[in-house]
Length: 390
Image 1 (cartoon, rainbow, N blue to C red):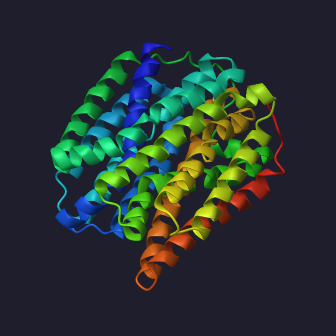
Image 2: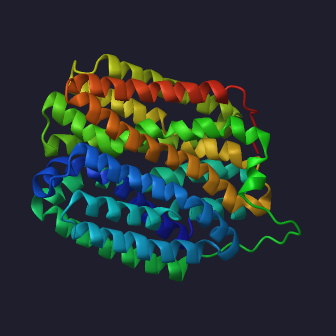
Image 3: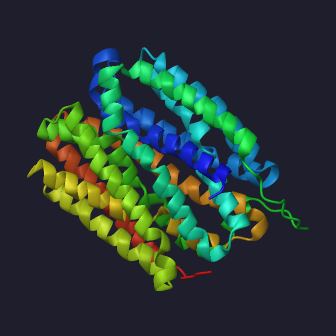
């Protein structure tokens, strides 16, 4: 793999880290600055919503300016600046503002690599390369688990965030220097996101894209910590180990999904069957909500594994994009995928806060079953989509 893609992969490690590390800081942030699970749900949701909202300008920037300037500049300002603001936080509001700024910084990283894959490599390899980048980059999920918990306990969460600010800044400067922009596409016609939304085939794929990543990202990035703490009384170290297990499952799922479309000659049915198993795991977790801690962790690992169809869904949709709208296309799909997580993080925080006061166990049951229902609805719509491979 090219050196610039390796650097983009490192940047994506940071992106995966930032979307998931709040789960292991639940207790310490509550103790130090009074941040409740609902506050952290709002902060996490803001990261995802800002990240999603940035996909439209990021897509236009990729098509116009290329991935080098787009990724380098935004990661420097948003990633480095946001981590520094988090390190200085004294109230839950500061955390929300910091997470929003970090969302800006992380927004172009994965799509910059996908843009390069779509423009510089054979179309049939897109899903495999996209899954490889997602899988390797998801090491950030692992670092955000037990290692982050260890760092918070050893040097403190503020010092950890200052270190992350420095790493983000250095990585951003490396992107600016090393990323190689693909040749500009010469074409006579202009286009926008509106042209992509006029493609009927995409409207049967977008709903599943909207809900597919919700459960894995929502549980791994936020709810695994409060759930295991409230229901099974796990401490920060135990939660870190559990998030590590789920993070590994998400990486393995991504790597398994990647080449299957070429092996089986279908994208639609790979996505449909895998996501169906993920929905079943969600309903099982809701049903056996307090039966066994390790059983619950195993089910959450299954949710992470089967919920990793993200790159195959993008590959399915990408087969309908015109070449000159590649940047806008992949970021449009990412908008729906990440935006769905942001919407549910806000909603899940309010739902949990409303129900948990009277029945904490029921709050988690409704939360996990609700995720399962949303994925099922997306699957029903996706069932009517046109299967297409390159």
